[in-house]
Image 1 (cartoon, rainbow, N blue to C red):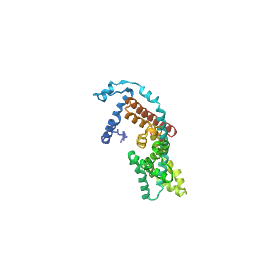
Image 2: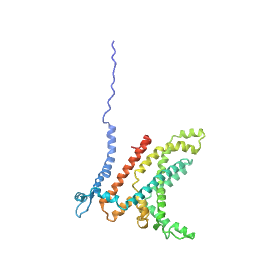
Image 3: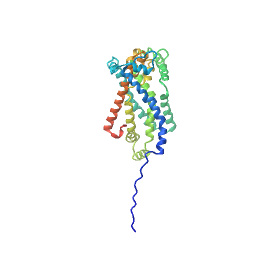
Image 4: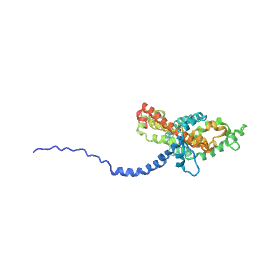
Amino acid sequence: MSSKKETTLPKRKKKWTRDDTELTFLGIPTFIWYVCFCYLPMFGIIIAFKNYKMKVGQGFFANLMTSKWAGFKNFEFFLKSGNFKLLLKNTIGYNIIFIILGILLPVTLAIMISLIHSKFKSKVYQTMMFLPHFMSWVVVTYFVIAFLDTDKGLINNIIESFGGERINFYTEPKFWPGIFVFMRQWKGVGYGMVVYLASITGIDGSLYEAAVIDGATKWQQVKYITLPSLKSIVIMMFILSIGGIFYSDFGLFYQLTRGASGSLYEVSNTFDVYIYNTLLGGGDLGRLAATSLTQSVACCCTILITNYIVKKIDKDQAII
């Protein structure tokens, strides 16, 4: 008898399965949300290239279509204005400090809490540090006033009790860079700490057990196991932070200083505060839109450049 070899062809995968349908329906609400609130509003970018004028009796689209084209004049006005250098210095300068401390402090605290043996104490410390993250800057502002107020502030009461003179902090700009840095870290360090702590808990415990058997100290375990394991998440958070270097925390610089005006203008005026104050003063919408668009483009370029540099150094650590 002649035996025929049976040849089995690989089964072709269906182009569309039931799982694909279910996942598609699951993703539709998110897709609609992004289209409505993230992509459709981008139509307003046109304002940055127009001499936008509002006329009585006309809607937004009618005013937009009838307004004359300004080209890049709105951008030129902002880049050549006398405030540009100050805004750029304050925005980038503060953000560089925030980014550096926003990595060092949370990583340090996360490692310290991970070394606490008592779970109860660990949870208490996490809650205490994470709680300020949920407070708005409006609420935090009243706490700051309670400390810095000239007449009834706690710090001025302490200074007076030691025979010193009361300080009007809201007219002394030299104190505010330190106040901004301290308050930003006080409010945000808990969130960053929880992110890094979650990464630490995901490290294989057998690595620490092997290190203990080999006689490694706590510092050696942190140096050779914990920190290398946190490398990926640290780089990712750094790249994302760099992506917002041309933006500033509006509540921090505006609410905390009661409007970022007067003698505190030089140390508290950033791009976002400038846009808001100019809008309140009836500034040109086209120029304000150009300022905001410049921020967005600059942040996009910054994050792409940073990711490119990281990719050149270590390809596996890049996020794009």
